[in-house]
Length: 305
Image (cartoon, rainbow, N blue to C red):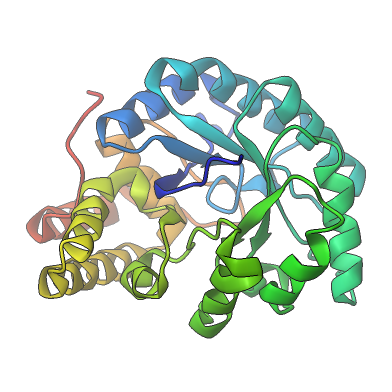
């Protein structure tokens, strides 16, 4: 029985030193911070984690760092293994299993794209079979991969071929497609929602969990949103979602990923800058942004100073 990814799953940043080199020593701070914010799962080396800007060795080092730090803080680790190189992806999946991580995930290759749904299933089957003892989640994010197929059809075709298929990390704004995926095979698949700005819409359709980057620094906001929704207080839940959108738009106005990493530094978790070609904000831009965010009341506690 696969334990589903219910609640909030933080899509974590990859920590770098100021010179851009990997900083795995920061991972325990990340794990401690998430735990103190009430988050008990981390999706590592994904889009937020700048996966395609990491070397093979760096990704393995991050897996090892999270495998070491996570148990002390009750964090389940989902390792993103996706790569444009299938052998690398298979290697990452195998390492994740060797380290007893919670689950493995993979997005589609984005340079030589699978031309058919069957080709995508072939690709996922090869990766998932490299970690047969771990739940496998396909990571659907067509805005970045350019690969888009009906996910309910993917689940139908992949299910008999991938015994450890757990579901989909659904980072696709198509709510109709999301609803179909939730209902596939009588609703047996786990389909965590992957777009922070409209979590409430996914909850209305039956979502039980979400994977997001802003859960790193604003988890209490989203947990309050989820609680209000389940208590039937839609007015409060909608207001909290509006604040989430306002927060994300403010951060994105100076370059979302670089700014989000800088925000983590102000919370006592120095994940450093983003790697090129992602831009990083200036110190003055962050100084101007922080009062706006605090006025919105959206940031988590300063938990790791």
